[in-house]
Image (cartoon, rainbow, N blue to C red; front, side, top):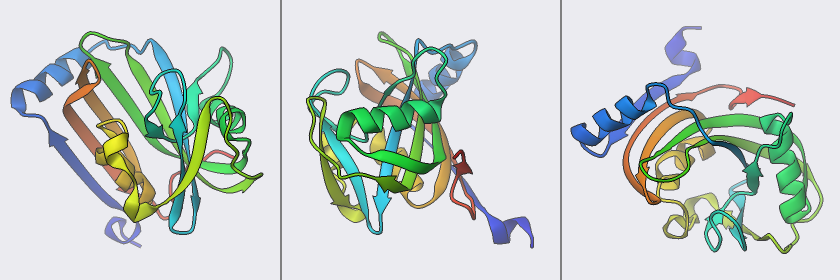
Length: 190
């Protein structure tokens, strides 16, 4: 089977040439201050999201997730955070995105996004998050981080995404995305 029969590739950029050049320049020698994870749980045509109740992103819609602790793998972090935030234990997940968030004036983040469809438990509201199922074609992007509308549709369509974003005070200024649709739907980690 040829390459075109097994995978689809694409790329996208936005924000204007000067801002994309700034993003590229800032990425030279860039190091994140924090590494975090997100876990998107799929059930057919639905995806489980949360309304964050506290911490970074409070009052926004997102997926369960959080900061990696010392010695913890990205997958272990995503599984732990999902259990802590909504009482669900993910049994198997695929890594579907690696995201660099380059901030002009704030904290630098590197993120891993996972997708799972095999889990145990009932999504339950906690002091950290209120879970809710959304149809994949009705995700409330206007209540999410600005960048989510750029990369998340690719992830939910089964594409592995690598992306870089330039932000200033949480406003997205420029982005570069590359994606690959893989027959197995991501990098299997467990």
